[in-house]
Length: 568
Image: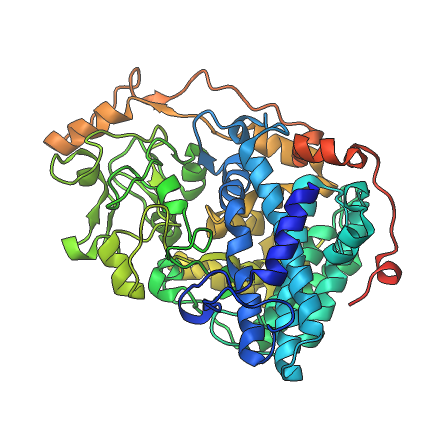
C-alpha cells in the first residue's frame, strides 16, 4: 500500500482520464487538456471516464492472476515458479505487481466515482457509471481478501491522502471485508440498469458476482459446514441471474474464448483489452503462454503447460497418441498430441499441434518443449491474420485485444447448484440439477441428466469448466475456510510434476507414425516431491515494500462496522 503508488493512480484517475486512447466502446478522449474542472461534462464523457476500469489498472494483475489462479492451484505447470512449490514470498515481483494493480483499481474506482457524483450528465448515465465503478471496486476487493486475507479498507483515496494517513491503515477482519464487498455490490445493483451497452457491466453482473461472494463467504470461520443464510443468498442471487438476465450459454464452448466473441452474452464480467500503441490497454498473455513461433512476434510459454493432474481430471494421457475427446472443454483448454485447430492460423488452413512443434517449415521450435504433454489454448488468439480478421486491428508484441472473462454464466449455474446442495452433500432439486446438467451436457454430449448431484460433482465440474481462466485457486481458498484439511489433502496429492522423454516420443511419432512407450524412458517423474501445503498456504504474504511503508499490515486486523462507518 505504498503512498506513492496510491497517489499516482488516484491522480491519474482524476486528471489522466483523457491521456490514453483505445478503440471501439473503450474510447477515451484523445486530448490531454481535460481535468477535473472541464471533464465529466456530458453523458459521453462520463462513459469515457469509466472505460479505463475495463483494462488499464488491471494490466499488472494479469501475470499474478494466472500464476495464483492456475499454477498455485495445480492446474498449470510453470517450471521453477514459487507458485508451483508454495514458496512465494513478499519480494516476488508478480506478487508486488499484482498487489499494486489491485489497489490501483480501487483508487481508480474511488476517484472516478467521486467525480461522477458532481458530473453534468443525465441521472441515468451517472448512476450506471457509478454502478460500474462499484462493481470493479468490489471485484478488486474480492481478489484482495481471497489472496491476502484481512486487508485495509480504502473507501476514499482523496480523503485519506488529504488526511495524510495513507500509511497508517489497519487491516480489517475478513468478515468485515466481505461485508464491505456485499454493501458495495448492493449499492451497485440499485444503480445499474438490467441491461447495458455491449460488453459493459449491468445489474445482473453485480448480482452474479454477489452470488459468488456469498458462496465464498459462507464457509469462513465455520468448521465442516457453511452458513445457511449465506448459501440461501448465493442461491437466490444466482437464480435471479439464471431466470431473469436473458443470458444463455453459448452452444459451442470454445467460442467463448474467440476474439470475434469478446462481448458474448455468456460473459457477465470481463477485462476488455485493446491492441494499441498505448501500453496497459492490451492483453499480453499470448506471449506468456504460447509456444515460440505461434505468432509473428515473440512467445516464450512453450516450456510450461497445463498440468498432468488437470489432464487426469479430463481423462487424458499424454503417453498416448490418441485423445479421448469425450469432453469438448479439454481441447479448448489444452493442446495435446493429435490436436488440430481450425480457428488458429486460419490463413494457413488451421493449426496442427505436433506438426508445428517439429516441422522445419512451420516456424515452430522443431522440438517438443512442454514437459507435461500439453500447452495452452485459452488466452490465445492465433496469428496476425486471425486477429485482424476478428477485430480489424493488428496485434503486436505482447499486445492483443482478446478479452479475459472473469465471471461467466456457467459459473453462476454451478454456484446455484452448489448453494442448493449446501451442507446436505447432495440434492435431488430439479432446478439445481438442470443448472448442473446444462453446463456439463454442453461439453459432454453423451452425458444424461442425473436424478441427483453431489458436492463432489460440482467441485469437479467447476475445475473442468473454468480451467485456465484464473479461478481455481479461489475454490481452494473457500474450501479451506471450512474444511482446511480436505483442501490440503487434494493439493498435496496432485500430479504437479513432469513427464520424462516426451520430446523423443513425439518426434518419433511425427517422423514415423510410430508411438512406442518405453516405461523406463517415457514416464511421469517417479521422484516428484509433494508440495508442502499448510494452513498458512491459503493466504499470500503482503509485498515486503508495503509492510515497510505501513508496519500496521503486520498487526492483527481490527473489527469495523462497515455499514455505519462507510456509505455510498
